[in-house]
Amino acid sequence: MPQPFHLAIPVTNLDDANAFYGELLGCKKGRSDTQWIDWNFFGHQLVTHCVEQMPSSPSHNGVDNHAVPVPHFGVVLSMDDWQTLATKLEAANVNFVIAPYVRFKGQTGEQATMFFEDPFGNALEFKAFANIEQLFAV
Image 1 (cartoon, rainbow, N blue to C red):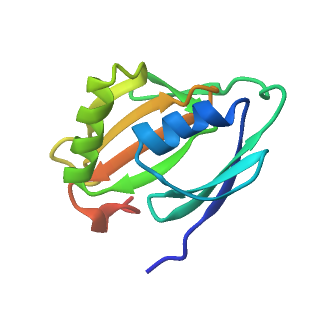
Image 2 (image 1 turned 90 degrees about the vertical axis):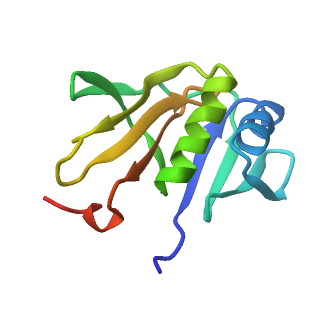
């Protein structure tokens, strides 16, 4: 099993970070201080660090006729967990950068994907593969 990654991202308000990462995404809160919160982000360590001002907005790269925000981060879920999260986000009226859809339907690397931003403009992608063994297929 791979080791968890560690990622630190900027936010401008820890209460809003708690509402998004803790309540909406369901991440368990770990250690925290007045300027940061550790999250169990689907088995990985995500730290939201409070900053006065967010860095510049992401750029975009064309993929499948969509404008994919760069940089972005996220995780690969099982197809069932991906669908459950997509349904939850849709019910919460999350504004998708790229709404949930399936890429490469019936082909090698078939995957479901969706992009959205946290309240601070950090871009996230969640995806799931029809066959996880094709994660790195060419």
